Image (cartoon, rainbow, N blue to C red; front, side, top):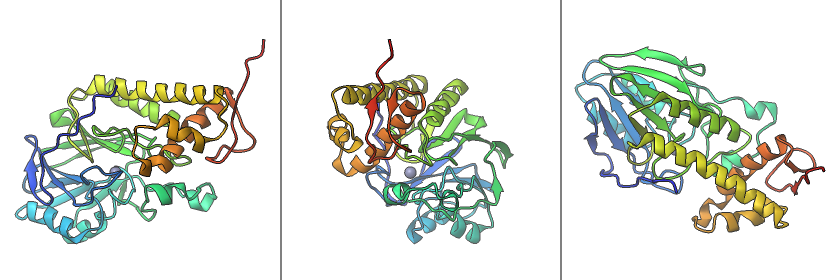
Length: 305
Ligand SMILES: [Zn+2]
Protein backbone atom coordinates (compact mmCIF):
# COMPACT_ATOMS: atom_id res chain seq x y z
CA UNK A 1 0.00 0.00 0.00
CA UNK A 2 1.22 3.50 -0.83
CA UNK A 3 1.42 5.64 2.35
CA UNK A 4 -0.54 8.53 0.82
CA UNK A 5 -0.45 11.94 2.54
CA UNK A 6 -3.49 14.15 1.96
CA UNK A 7 -3.67 16.43 4.98
CA UNK A 8 -2.95 19.92 3.64
CA UNK A 9 -3.68 23.10 5.58
CA UNK A 10 -4.32 26.00 3.24
CA UNK A 11 -6.76 28.64 2.09
CA UNK A 12 -7.07 29.61 -1.58
CA UNK A 13 -4.96 32.67 -2.33
CA UNK A 14 -3.30 32.78 1.10
CA UNK A 15 0.51 32.59 1.23
CA UNK A 16 1.86 30.17 3.86
CA UNK A 17 5.46 29.83 5.00
CA UNK A 18 5.95 26.04 4.82
CA UNK A 19 9.73 25.78 5.47
CA UNK A 20 12.52 28.29 6.21
CA UNK A 21 12.96 29.09 2.49
CA UNK A 22 9.65 27.97 0.99
CA UNK A 23 6.23 29.64 0.82
CA UNK A 24 3.14 28.23 -0.90
CA UNK A 25 0.00 29.75 -2.47
CA UNK A 26 -2.72 27.32 -3.65
CA UNK A 27 -4.77 28.18 -6.77
CA UNK A 28 -8.52 27.66 -6.74
CA UNK A 29 -8.54 24.93 -9.41
CA UNK A 30 -9.43 21.72 -7.54
CA UNK A 31 -10.25 18.67 -9.64
CA UNK A 32 -9.65 14.96 -10.27
CA UNK A 33 -6.08 15.63 -11.50
CA UNK A 34 -5.20 18.55 -9.24
CA UNK A 35 -6.51 17.44 -5.80
CA UNK A 36 -7.08 20.73 -3.86
CA UNK A 37 -5.49 22.77 -6.66
CA UNK A 38 -2.09 23.85 -7.93
CA UNK A 39 0.40 24.61 -5.14
CA UNK A 40 2.64 27.40 -6.36
CA UNK A 41 5.90 27.59 -4.41
CA UNK A 42 7.86 30.77 -3.73
CA UNK A 43 11.52 30.28 -2.77
CA UNK A 44 13.80 32.79 -1.06
CA UNK A 45 13.18 36.32 0.14
CA UNK A 46 13.65 39.87 -1.06
CA UNK A 47 15.70 40.85 -4.08
CA UNK A 48 15.42 37.65 -6.09
CA UNK A 49 12.78 35.06 -5.34
CA UNK A 50 11.92 32.03 -7.44
CA UNK A 51 8.43 30.78 -8.29
CA UNK A 52 7.85 27.12 -9.13
CA UNK A 53 4.80 26.25 -11.27
CA UNK A 54 2.80 29.51 -11.27
CA UNK A 55 -0.14 27.40 -12.44
CA UNK A 56 -3.28 27.97 -14.49
CA UNK A 57 -4.02 31.29 -16.20
CA UNK A 58 -6.27 32.70 -13.46
CA UNK A 59 -6.17 36.42 -12.63
CA UNK A 60 -6.91 35.91 -8.94
CA UNK A 61 -4.00 33.46 -8.64
CA UNK A 62 -1.65 35.86 -10.45
CA UNK A 63 -2.74 38.57 -8.03
CA UNK A 64 -2.21 36.26 -5.03
CA UNK A 65 1.38 35.55 -6.15
CA UNK A 66 2.05 39.28 -6.73
CA UNK A 67 0.52 40.17 -3.34
CA UNK A 68 2.64 37.52 -1.60
CA UNK A 69 5.81 39.07 -3.09
CA UNK A 70 4.67 42.72 -2.94
CA UNK A 71 7.96 44.24 -1.72
CA UNK A 72 10.19 41.66 -3.34
CA UNK A 73 11.36 40.86 -6.85
CA UNK A 74 10.52 37.62 -8.65
CA UNK A 75 13.65 36.84 -10.68
CA UNK A 76 13.12 33.22 -11.73
CA UNK A 77 10.14 31.08 -12.74
CA UNK A 78 10.64 27.29 -12.88
CA UNK A 79 8.18 25.07 -14.74
CA UNK A 80 7.93 21.31 -14.09
CA UNK A 81 5.97 20.55 -17.30
CA UNK A 82 3.58 22.07 -19.81
CA UNK A 83 0.19 20.91 -18.46
CA UNK A 84 -2.42 23.65 -18.08
CA UNK A 85 -2.47 23.47 -14.28
CA UNK A 86 1.29 24.23 -14.18
CA UNK A 87 2.61 26.45 -16.98
CA UNK A 88 0.13 28.97 -18.49
CA UNK A 89 0.57 31.66 -15.82
CA UNK A 90 4.35 31.75 -16.45
CA UNK A 91 4.14 34.34 -19.28
CA UNK A 92 1.73 36.74 -17.50
CA UNK A 93 3.85 36.49 -14.33
CA UNK A 94 7.06 37.10 -16.28
CA UNK A 95 5.43 40.08 -18.02
CA UNK A 96 4.44 41.55 -14.64
CA UNK A 97 7.82 41.00 -12.97
CA UNK A 98 10.56 40.67 -15.62
CA UNK A 99 11.41 37.18 -14.36
CA UNK A 100 13.12 34.60 -16.58
CA UNK A 101 11.29 31.32 -17.29
CA UNK A 102 13.14 27.98 -16.96
CA UNK A 103 11.78 24.66 -18.17
CA UNK A 104 11.72 22.22 -21.07
CA UNK A 105 9.58 22.87 -24.14
CA UNK A 106 7.06 20.29 -25.33
CA UNK A 107 8.31 17.88 -27.93
CA UNK A 108 6.53 18.63 -31.18
CA UNK A 109 4.50 15.43 -31.17
CA UNK A 110 1.80 17.00 -33.27
CA UNK A 111 4.27 17.85 -36.02
CA UNK A 112 5.51 14.29 -36.10
CA UNK A 113 1.94 12.99 -36.22
CA UNK A 114 2.65 10.82 -33.17
CA UNK A 115 0.15 12.25 -30.77
CA UNK A 116 -3.31 10.80 -30.40
CA UNK A 117 -5.85 13.15 -28.89
CA UNK A 118 -5.33 11.34 -25.58
CA UNK A 119 -3.34 14.02 -23.87
CA UNK A 120 -5.53 16.81 -25.09
CA UNK A 121 -8.65 15.17 -23.70
CA UNK A 122 -7.25 13.84 -20.45
CA UNK A 123 -4.89 16.32 -18.91
CA UNK A 124 -4.76 19.17 -21.31
CA UNK A 125 -1.35 20.47 -22.18
CA UNK A 126 -0.23 23.94 -23.05
CA UNK A 127 1.57 23.01 -26.24
CA UNK A 128 2.76 26.55 -26.75
CA UNK A 129 4.85 26.39 -23.58
CA UNK A 130 8.38 27.49 -24.43
CA UNK A 131 10.76 28.61 -21.65
CA UNK A 132 13.31 31.43 -21.92
CA UNK A 133 16.04 29.07 -20.71
CA UNK A 134 15.90 25.40 -21.62
CA UNK A 135 16.87 22.96 -18.86
CA UNK A 136 15.90 19.75 -20.72
CA UNK A 137 19.33 18.28 -20.01
CA UNK A 138 19.54 19.49 -16.39
CA UNK A 139 21.22 22.58 -14.98
CA UNK A 140 22.14 24.33 -11.74
CA UNK A 141 20.76 27.84 -11.21
CA UNK A 142 22.23 30.10 -8.50
CA UNK A 143 19.80 32.59 -7.01
CA UNK A 144 19.58 35.11 -4.18
CA UNK A 145 20.12 32.83 -1.17
CA UNK A 146 19.03 29.67 -2.94
CA UNK A 147 20.41 27.12 -5.40
CA UNK A 148 18.12 25.19 -7.72
CA UNK A 149 19.10 22.09 -9.67
CA UNK A 150 16.91 21.11 -12.62
CA UNK A 151 16.65 17.31 -12.81
CA UNK A 152 15.05 15.81 -15.95
CA UNK A 153 12.42 13.26 -14.86
CA UNK A 154 10.57 12.05 -17.98
CA UNK A 155 7.62 9.69 -17.55
CA UNK A 156 4.46 11.65 -16.65
CA UNK A 157 5.41 13.77 -19.67
CA UNK A 158 8.58 13.69 -21.77
CA UNK A 159 9.49 17.23 -20.67
CA UNK A 160 8.98 16.83 -16.90
CA UNK A 161 11.66 18.49 -14.76
CA UNK A 162 11.98 18.27 -10.96
CA UNK A 163 13.82 21.06 -9.13
CA UNK A 164 16.09 20.40 -6.14
CA UNK A 165 16.54 23.17 -3.56
CA UNK A 166 20.05 22.43 -2.30
CA UNK A 167 19.84 24.55 0.88
CA UNK A 168 17.04 22.33 2.23
CA UNK A 169 17.87 19.01 0.50
CA UNK A 170 14.31 19.32 -0.81
CA UNK A 171 12.80 18.54 -4.20
CA UNK A 172 9.92 20.21 -6.03
CA UNK A 173 8.59 17.02 -7.55
CA UNK A 174 5.83 18.47 -9.79
CA UNK A 175 3.51 15.66 -10.88
CA UNK A 176 6.33 13.08 -10.94
CA UNK A 177 5.77 12.08 -7.29
CA UNK A 178 2.62 13.24 -5.50
CA UNK A 179 1.60 12.44 -1.93
CA UNK A 180 -2.14 12.36 -2.58
CA UNK A 181 -2.20 10.09 -5.65
CA UNK A 182 -0.23 8.13 -8.18
CA UNK A 183 0.64 10.02 -11.35
CA UNK A 184 -0.94 9.45 -14.77
CA UNK A 185 1.39 8.14 -17.48
CA UNK A 186 -0.19 8.79 -20.87
CA UNK A 187 1.51 7.46 -24.01
CA UNK A 188 2.92 8.51 -26.36
CA UNK A 189 4.28 11.54 -24.47
CA UNK A 190 4.21 9.62 -21.18
CA UNK A 191 6.42 6.54 -20.95
CA UNK A 192 6.33 3.89 -18.21
CA UNK A 193 9.93 2.71 -18.60
CA UNK A 194 11.15 6.33 -18.39
CA UNK A 195 8.82 6.92 -15.45
CA UNK A 196 10.23 4.02 -13.41
CA UNK A 197 13.81 5.08 -14.23
CA UNK A 198 12.99 8.63 -13.08
CA UNK A 199 11.62 7.26 -9.78
CA UNK A 200 14.86 5.35 -9.17
CA UNK A 201 16.89 8.45 -10.05
CA UNK A 202 15.07 10.55 -7.43
CA UNK A 203 15.21 7.78 -4.83
CA UNK A 204 19.00 7.57 -5.22
CA UNK A 205 19.38 11.28 -4.44
CA UNK A 206 18.24 10.91 -0.82
CA UNK A 207 16.09 14.04 -0.57
CA UNK A 208 14.72 14.88 2.88
CA UNK A 209 11.44 16.32 1.60
CA UNK A 210 9.44 16.24 -1.62
CA UNK A 211 7.13 19.17 -2.41
CA UNK A 212 4.63 18.05 -5.08
CA UNK A 213 2.68 20.67 -7.02
CA UNK A 214 -0.53 19.17 -5.62
CA UNK A 215 -1.08 18.33 -1.97
CA UNK A 216 1.15 18.24 1.11
CA UNK A 217 4.88 17.40 1.27
CA UNK A 218 6.27 13.86 1.49
CA UNK A 219 8.76 13.43 4.32
CA UNK A 220 9.14 9.62 4.40
CA UNK A 221 10.72 9.78 0.97
CA UNK A 222 12.37 6.38 0.47
CA UNK A 223 9.47 4.22 1.76
CA UNK A 224 7.09 6.35 -0.32
CA UNK A 225 9.04 5.88 -3.56
CA UNK A 226 9.49 2.15 -2.84
CA UNK A 227 5.72 1.82 -2.45
CA UNK A 228 5.15 3.85 -5.63
CA UNK A 229 7.41 1.46 -7.61
CA UNK A 230 5.81 -1.59 -6.02
CA UNK A 231 2.39 -0.24 -7.00
CA UNK A 232 3.46 -0.16 -10.66
CA UNK A 233 4.75 -3.74 -10.43
CA UNK A 234 1.38 -4.76 -8.92
CA UNK A 235 -0.44 -3.08 -11.81
CA UNK A 236 1.62 -5.00 -14.30
CA UNK A 237 0.80 -8.26 -12.46
CA UNK A 238 -2.92 -7.36 -12.50
CA UNK A 239 -2.81 -6.69 -16.24
CA UNK A 240 -1.11 -10.03 -16.87
CA UNK A 241 -3.80 -11.73 -14.74
CA UNK A 242 -6.55 -10.09 -16.79
CA UNK A 243 -4.90 -11.26 -20.01
CA UNK A 244 -4.53 -14.73 -18.54
CA UNK A 245 -8.25 -14.71 -17.66
CA UNK A 246 -9.02 -14.04 -21.32
CA UNK A 247 -9.56 -10.27 -21.32
CA UNK A 248 -8.20 -8.85 -24.56
CA UNK A 249 -9.14 -5.14 -24.37
CA UNK A 250 -7.92 -2.38 -22.05
CA UNK A 251 -11.36 -0.81 -21.66
CA UNK A 252 -12.79 -4.02 -20.19
CA UNK A 253 -9.81 -4.45 -17.84
CA UNK A 254 -9.95 -0.95 -16.35
CA UNK A 255 -13.18 -1.19 -14.26
CA UNK A 256 -11.88 -4.45 -12.75
CA UNK A 257 -8.36 -3.23 -12.01
CA UNK A 258 -9.49 0.24 -10.88
CA UNK A 259 -12.64 -0.80 -8.98
CA UNK A 260 -11.77 1.58 -6.12
CA UNK A 261 -11.13 4.61 -8.34
CA UNK A 262 -13.36 7.54 -9.33
CA UNK A 263 -14.86 6.50 -12.74
CA UNK A 264 -14.05 10.01 -14.05
CA UNK A 265 -10.45 8.79 -14.03
CA UNK A 266 -11.14 5.66 -16.12
CA UNK A 267 -10.02 7.24 -19.42
CA UNK A 268 -6.77 8.30 -17.73
CA UNK A 269 -6.44 4.85 -16.13
CA UNK A 270 -6.86 3.25 -19.57
CA UNK A 271 -3.83 5.19 -20.75
CA UNK A 272 -1.81 4.12 -17.71
CA UNK A 273 -2.71 0.49 -18.53
CA UNK A 274 -1.64 1.17 -22.12
CA UNK A 275 1.68 2.51 -20.82
CA UNK A 276 2.25 -0.83 -19.06
CA UNK A 277 1.07 -2.88 -22.04
CA UNK A 278 3.46 -1.00 -24.36
CA UNK A 279 6.33 -2.19 -22.14
CA UNK A 280 4.93 -5.76 -22.12
CA UNK A 281 4.70 -5.72 -25.92
CA UNK A 282 8.21 -4.29 -26.20
CA UNK A 283 9.58 -7.06 -23.95
CA UNK A 284 7.75 -9.73 -25.95
CA UNK A 285 5.40 -10.95 -23.21
CA UNK A 286 2.26 -9.61 -24.90
CA UNK A 287 1.32 -9.49 -28.58
CA UNK A 288 -0.92 -7.22 -30.66
CA UNK A 289 -1.40 -6.26 -34.30
CA UNK A 290 0.21 -2.94 -35.18
CA UNK A 291 1.13 -0.16 -32.76
CA UNK A 292 -0.55 -0.64 -29.34
CA UNK A 293 -3.51 1.69 -28.64
CA UNK A 294 -6.27 1.73 -26.00
CA UNK A 295 -8.54 0.00 -28.54
CA UNK A 296 -6.10 -2.71 -29.64
CA UNK A 297 -6.61 -6.40 -28.96
CA UNK A 298 -3.91 -7.96 -26.76
CA UNK A 299 -2.88 -11.54 -26.07
CA UNK A 300 -0.38 -13.16 -23.77
CA UNK A 301 2.53 -14.68 -25.61
CA UNK A 302 2.65 -18.33 -24.59
CA UNK A 303 6.15 -19.29 -23.49
CA UNK A 304 7.67 -21.73 -25.98
CA UNK A 305 8.77 -25.05 -24.55
ZN1 LIG B 1 -0.62 18.84 -12.26
